[in-house]
Amino acid sequence: MGRAVGHQQGDGSRVSGDRPTPGLKPATRLARAGRARRFTQGVVNPPVYHASTCTFETLAEFDARRADPDSGLFYGRRGTPTLWALEEALTSLQEQAEGTRLFPSGVAAIAGAFLSVVRPGDHVLLADSVYEPTRAMAKGLLERLGAEPEYYDPRIGGDVAALFRKNTRAVYMESPGSLTFEVQDVPAICAAAQDAGITTIADNTWASPLLFPALDRGVDIEIQSLTKFVVGHSDVLMGSLTARKSHWPRVKAMALRLGQTVGPDDAYLTLRGLRTLDSRLKRHGESALHIARELARHSAVARVLCPGLDGDPGHELWQRDFAGYSSLFSIELAGGSRSDLAAMVDRLELFSMGFSFGGYESLVLPVDPGELRTATEFRAAGPILRIHIGMEDPGDLLEDLIAGLDRFARQAGLAT
Picture 1: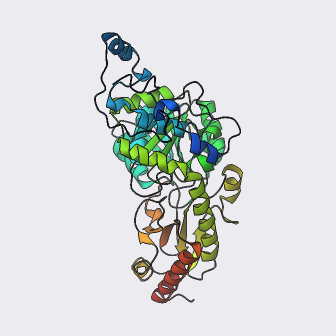
Picture 2: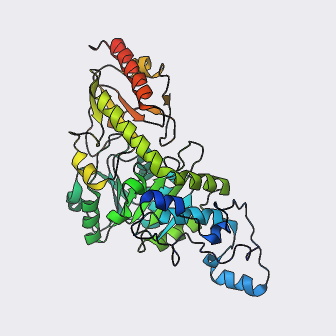
Picture 3: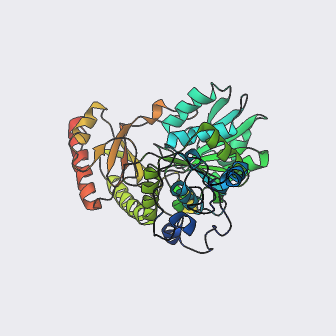
């Protein structure tokens, strides 16, 4: 019943005393966030509430809750303590975050961000390196709403201001880029947009707030595909929007109007994954950088697209803005064709071929970034493989990849 869990904050926003203690390190925040007694009733983890209808004991309680639906349990679509605990935990990771809403996938969260901000007649700027479903949504959703998407060079930095129009409503960033890993100067872009009164949106899935606290760097609305690193086990689809105070009311209202919500079991698994995010990201990043450095030495590799490596065009910005590396990078092969890739990927023992990333298992994905670009040109000497380094032993993973590259080189007629 409505009073069974006491007073709640059901809108995903901070309540008094929920801001993390200043100075706490990320691992400490992750272990403690979302564990307020009003969520847990004294046990370590929040219970899993399966709920649609929430009941009220008196007319006075019913009328009070209708007047303020965020004061406690109202209806399952507006959340339960299981969901609120996860939302609060995500919000607590950034000082400038006011609230978080959950969505059934990362793509649903992207749609929620656009619908929270963009109106017919608006102009929207997007980095040319964005996630392919984002580009598809710009075409299939924004244009149908009467908005105009325009793509920009992801390395433009503060010069993005030259592209602003009177009707520019938002700048959409993804740093590093989804397949080619360009690092954007997010603080400079945000400063230019703020001066012009333009909303900034960033897909921060690659880094999470642990490696890049997007809102604390100036972003207005942060998107995460929680499916990836936060869940960490490739068994849940979920997305989130976290917003600063100025944009939180719009994000919250749009999520409610769209009826977006998630299941309590998925929320529980996501919250459990969040507890180990710090340790997992460190393992992913250390292994990824080690393997990327070694692959760069192979004669079949023309280049490694990895801002964590010296010499990468985005390395200085990555060092300045990020607290560590993630699991993802791409390799450009030094010749050959897509059909030659079969010699490599079909016989990998430790890497599966599939979409997504952030899970404990390692993945490879053949990609063609050039076919997606419209504002910039991307040319490659040979096929491109995006690589997600999982939690396996990095020596074993490297051995598997080297053997695959040797097979590819023989198949493609490249010198080894």
